[in-house]
Amino acid sequence: MIKSMATGGRVAGCSGSNFSALLQNQRGPCATSQPLDPFFLTGSSSSFLGSRSMVSFEDVHQVNGSTRPFFRTFDQDENGDDELDEYFHQPEKKRRLSVDQVHFLEKSFEVENKLEPERKIQLAKELGLQPRQVAIWFQNRRARWKTKQLEKDYEALHTSYNSLKADYDALLKEKDILKAEVSLLTDKMLLREKGNLELSDKDTLSQEPPKNPIGDSTSEGEVSKVSIVACKQEDISSAKSDIFDSDSPHYTDGVHSSLLEAGDSSYVFEPDQSDLSQDEEDNLSKNLLPSYVFPKLEDVNYSEAAASFEDHAFWCWSY
DNA sequence: TTGTGTTTTATTGCCTCC
DNA sequence: GGAGGCAATAAAACACAA
Image (cartoon, rainbow, N blue to C red; front, top):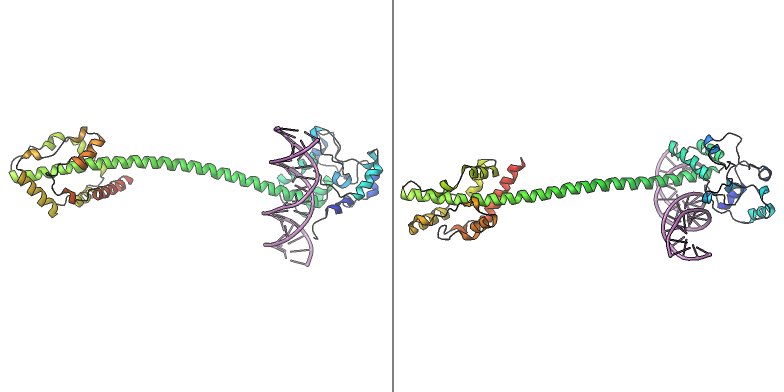
């Protein structure tokens, strides 16, 4: 491949350097005549001498805090000739950049994470690296930055999701509570309606002033409680009419005949429900209503009507 | 010391842009 | 078509527990 440099290809040393100078120059061939960034000249006993990877194969990475020069020149070695021989006969090993080099590159990356050709050459010159090494370092650094960014984004999204889910769960619970309340009030209201209708029928038959047990037992407060359920009276009426339509043959015929047959006001069923528990009310509304009072009540689709009413009430509350 | 997991450096192949 | 970027990957270097 044209643009990629074979590992062995980098053995020749720094760009523009001459290898004999490498052997003679204590500072190494890649040391720039220009002053380096002060960053490199402070805080470390190791002088910046250029790319070790271009000069010496010895690992000069400062492991365990030991301070070794960035690279070692051959004339510093006891057996420099042997190493020189190895230099030409072994493939170059991969080496890490020094701490200072990485630091310098990091600073540069913070300024601009893309590398223009001139900047690349300048950096390479200052660090004593091949321009390609600088380019590769930036390439890998961008990849690492992207990975970190993705992790951050994921964390942010996850946090946001958890928060939204908590809100959603809370709303679901609230909805269930409100639904149960609607159901309770609906049952109450239907029971009361039945009692009222029964009474009015009795009145029309006997032409007597009603004993009206309802009037005695039902407080204004309870009525208003029911009216809270429905924000619009007409909505309630429409819901009610599904059940207790006075034009309905089921209703009129049934009640009338039963009333006439019973001939006794004691059949009027109107318990004071205000003290009843939910279970008691349920039993009353579903099971305890005597069949002789509402002989054809089973013809009414009770649950459907209640559901219809619940819908009305729910949407009223939504406003 | 060694096995193993992680990090860093470098390569390869593909894509886009000029 | 060449240069440069990116994703995937190889491989060396490193860290660390057993």
